[in-house]
Length: 369
Image 1 (tube, rainbow, N blue to C red):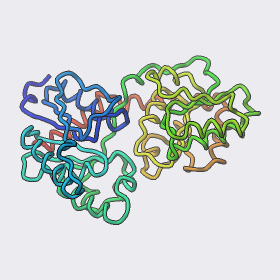
Image 2: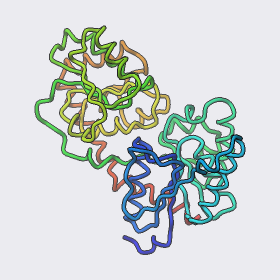
Image 3: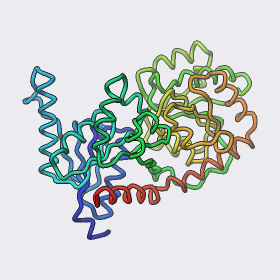
Image 4: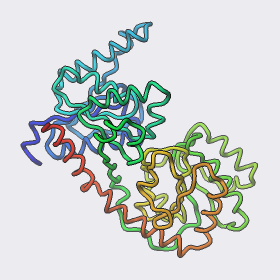
């Protein structure tokens, strides 16, 4: 721990700590900076159930205005939220605040004006989805130009923003969850195909199910296991019944020991239409699983994978290509194993100690002006 860092304070601003990819990244960064001796405060708009736990010693501040102050006017509520967040920065006096996700970034830039806090905005998902329409991108370009720092996850994301913002932005990866840093399993693989993620339309698990059904007679010993839950769970069960694979589909829901559950699988699938840089994909690669993933618009898959080297990349929504890729890997275990071994190399690239140092160097650059 560096005692000089105790003079510096870092704030993290996010909607809540409800379990999700961006939230976990913020909690991990908060823990790292606290261990490095910085003072850390986590500011969230809400407090929800099933949240990540903060490390001991990290202060938590809620920025919501509270029901007693909610007005019937949306404009009044908006300005009350602005004022409260501005007051939090004035009281907490962080040297830097890192924000993420859509309008939170706007709020961070606007409410730190007139304070000594330097705002760093981050885009963790598909930029076009975080800032849709005509006016949101224009507002993002305007406000991001006034941010002290801008963090993107992919090079492809730069093209969404104006030249000034794109040139100002840096690319910083998310570190790998330590639970997935382990020697690659080298034994006989289980005859199961796995996926991890919320069951919603964007994740497109139905395409996995249809590709699996198309290959069910050729590979009768395999099952499809999808970890996660969501509004399309019953639809998946009904579809599996219609396709004649209900007895070979397993939906265990949300599990705590994902690494243990999937590390011996024969194949991992990511079939989303859009993602930022998928944590589930990072973790599957780190475990050394043979992977098939869709080429999402943000470039997140391309940041992690090289087609034919550490996995197979297919166009989003392309059922035929997914079926062909699954057939290729299930039919050639030696090739699948070679891809998996190459995939596990990402453990070195995204090791927490390496990635966290990159974030620290960038934050220090911002704090020191």
